[in-house]
Image (cartoon, rainbow, N blue to C red; front, side, top):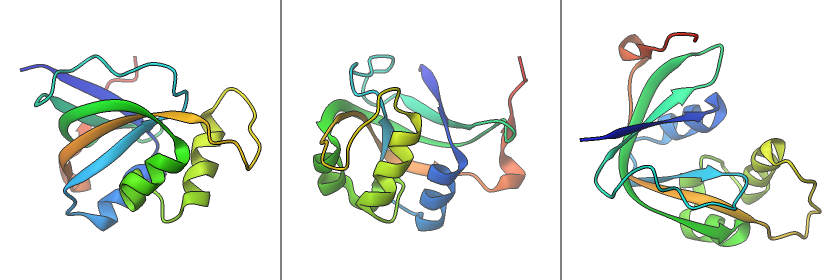
Length: 131
């Protein structure tokens, strides 16, 4: 079995961990230009928190990936996008986008759908080497 380690920020992770248990989550990609092809459905996708929290802290089972307009991603997955509102989700995405957008832009984002997401207690996080 293969696995993929996706880097995520703590805000996304912490929000979803508080909502756990969940049936699925959307691990979004702000660029929205490429389909995720690293895994086949049923393979393991792990969450690695960004520095300074360099740990694998959870994961899920890769279901599929798609590219959707940001509004449709919100309509489809709601809070499972890792944010309490559409506006907050947009703010988080736009922090990582390389091009500016207006409040009316319905730009595409990558959506990696993960089923059976799990969030490890901090005592079980797996340290990741700095290099």
